[in-house]
Length: 289
Image 1 (cartoon, rainbow, N blue to C red):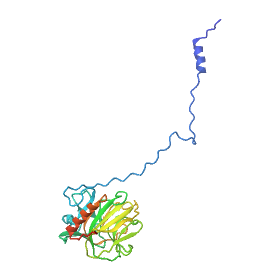
Image 2 (cartoon, one colour; image 1 turned 180 degrees about the vertical axis):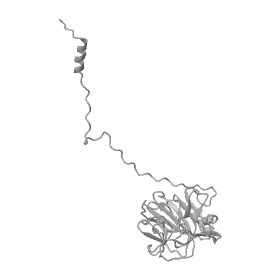
Image 3 (cartoon, rainbow, N blue to C red; image 1 turned 90 degrees about the horizontal axis):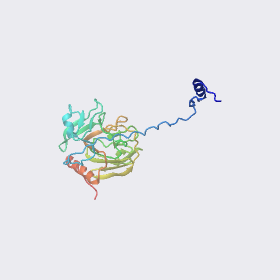
């Protein structure tokens, strides 16, 4: 004989037989997390610097121009004969006084009918808006039209630089360049590359790559693929009339023009720039056959 249980009793029995949900164990302090911490992002690549492409009728190669300053452009903006700002409407970069009390002079009609920016060797220097360090300018070309009032190796004097004390990119008078009084910083010291004479104008081309420097003076090779080891820890600006803010090494003499490319020039392009500047400033450009 079947025994019928009340419906309520059946439900009570089934409910008691149902398993309670099991809570997952709390993770212990020694349990590895399901996901590993995210790796640190790689160092950010420095942003490229703005360059200009010149008009087709420009007298120098058109592409990749970082800086182009002619002293003629500084005449109009000078105040009391002093250079406060130096710019060229064709390029986005410029130069300005590093310190208001250290202003170089601009002298009109000083060189073959053209102006020069004149540094007196005491405390005058200009700061540009470009960076010539190897991180932001691994390859580049710097062309200067310069003269010095002295051939003395000391005190040290530089026509340009971005040196923070580590023999970073800079060139000028130096007593550590062997038998030459004009030398270049190559990361591990100074490489002398020509004997500068006082009160004489030169067209100088310095070609940079990450581990090499080549230079030409008035069309003649002075350094040929000289080994260099510049570090990336440099001053973030190119200075004119000195090495920068660490040792300064103020220039005594004139700077008529400075052109900086964010690339190497071909031989034909380099000769184009040299010939243009030589004709403009009355400098004889001579080359080996």
